[in-house]
Image: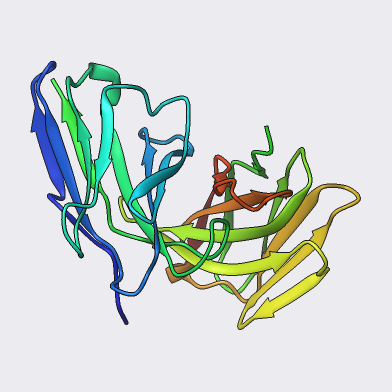
Length: 114
Length: 113
């Protein structure tokens, strides 16, 4: 069964550094998402992406965050200047059709900001 | 917020017993979904129920939706140790359909062999 893949599985960075989290969504999917989960807490929506532009974003997704689909397969989340509170598991997801339908999640990238 | 809230936060049962988890939400929805998360892993979609449906089955899973009470329940019958995981409800808000899925805090289910 096709799956969403994320790299790296773990990322450790120093506060203030830039990080790029990478995702390869399922190939025929049209909608892409980033969610994050702080340890033991709820899964929070960050951003959705469709047709090469952001379709929705949450309050969490401020100016230090950006997303990009640099080619036909990769979908990236960049955090420009990481803060301690950015430490979380970041999940990429994709869906075949419109927002609100079944999401397929990757296994996540555990980001630790020191 | 349309965010779903699961109840209970944690549930521990013996293998073979049934597990029931509940979800409440605040605003109108297009659909409600349940996801499962094994420790440290991504979420896996279990079942989707639309606002005009009242009950849905998938294998050992049974989901009900009561839009008048803004609540849903997930029943896992004849539980197995492998069902041990966190279970999340997620709501898709009503209206234009452009709102993202919003997840609750989850129920941690432990099935003891």
